[in-house]
Image (cartoon, rainbow, N blue to C red; front, side, top):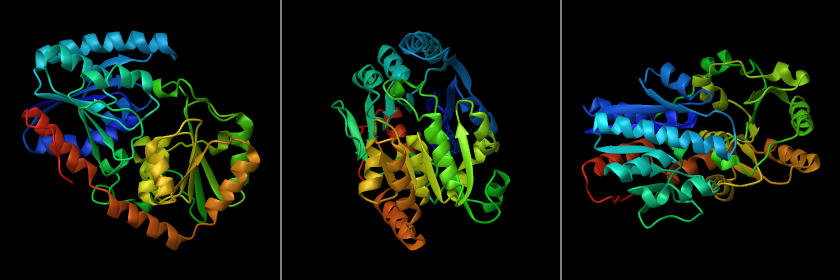
Length: 350
């Protein structure tokens, strides 16, 4: 079978990494199309995954996103005409859904972000199948499937990932005591158009408070204030999950990283004005995430202190319950996309 995997964000590299390897090991031909954004292409290169860049984001806002979509669709259409895939797959999947409908190639769209309303509206009606976690809370087309898991379990399931403390130390983990990880984002993604980030003062207060208990590392998509620059993450982005796995607490604006920590058994505070079904479930079912909506410092300080009180035993128990309730998502992706390539009924039993 011939499979196109469309990558437009760094997290998508991790999501598809194991399925790509499994498809290739079984003799299937995989073509990866990519987007030059942040560290996505660097991750692909670091993992030895050959790819073809179709577009890049030339600034923020709807105009830039619309311009890129036109460019990407045209480039993908030419790739499809030349490669003749049996199936296309991706996360969010605007281009694969639209080009798939035009060319008659099945498209399997994986997604978990409810507030990307515009992109979902121009994707879901064209996709052959939309696949979401069971906790997804927004509208879905008739052609959809829910599965018991999270995107992050495609690459951080215990069958797939084994945290290495030495790698974590090489990437900034404190030799002794606790390490805290903070993440800030640029708010340029399509699902971020109605969101905004922390103020520098809130970031400063959070950093200073956590510094009383251990080492603080900040990963930021934008330049940090001078007085926080000593906390900047300088490690290898391809190895960041080893670092996160040994942290005491995650605090940040990335829902993906909050969920990554939850599936690793690390408590997380996800700070954003809009939520996600998966972080809501990770809070209500397992208590591994706190979804922060009130950005006042007294509220954040109270939540930080509550999360720091969680015992190791309670975290281990919550983590095991999460794993017991979910599946190895990489195996599911591998099998389901092949069903679409063979034009079989897109059904699945868990």
